[in-house]
Length: 343
Ligand code: GN1
Ligand code: MG
Figure 1: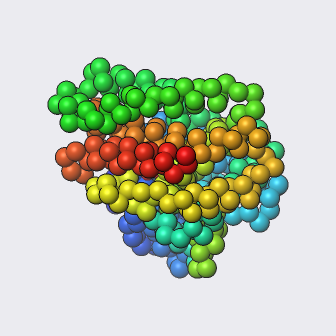
Figure 2 (figure 1 turned 135 degrees about the horizontal axis):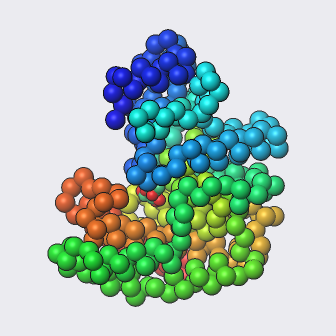
């Protein structure tokens, strides 16, 4: 990962005299370290090129967004990568890609949403991000993950895994598979949504989990982070992943499915927070699909987990036998609970 030699090159490229390293807990995809340099704290990240094949395109995306926001919304906290001494923001060493972000002083992240107020704040942050970029042509962005939230494609990948995947695991996942096949109307509803003239593509974050929002000491939202998947997309993606991850008191890792439940007051807080920034921007047609976003994202996560389970955990990995099946069953339970809550 990041050996002594690599760290030495990084240090030089950023013009740092000394650095102290602290590992931090972060997402499933990139490797992140906290680095302290002469009293200043940074995040040093190695981009996972198994997932993101073109880190330079992401770097360009972040540069374009930073420029636009700098001009149009001065004062908005946008966590663009820090420049090296040569002005570049992406460092390539032996075909590996590194970048550095400022650690935002006084900020913290949370892993679980305990109060509706936190859901409101986070949702407002993601809404504000898209709203502030309404004058930016989203189609200028490179697609860091083409078809990332294309539910039709995700369904086809699920079908392919059913054809070619691990047979033993197919038996173990039978109930979840049957359920996910029987709820295929979600795919149809997605297709009719994206075919509608009032469904617009905008700058969309695509990974709105709570740990991707920085909070201040008073639990007010400061900014959104983890911007690799910022691409043109539908608001369903952002609002939907918030319903998926904030409305439930436990995460997708929870094995005790009795703890997987949906909190209506959190659903309302997400809705209110998002609309506080996006009310004028969304069409009535889109607003009518707010909750559909939740159904769609929970469903998509369930089929992504089960697909990976059938494919022997090649994407998400697995820390214990059956890990991706647990995640799948968790999301299936969540989908049932969510549909009940919005009925
Ligand atoms: C991945 O790396 P992380 O934890 O931010 C995934 C998301 C999933 C999430 C589920 C690029 O996000 O789409 O919702 O895991 N990101 C990618 O935990 O696949
Ligand atoms: Mg992420």
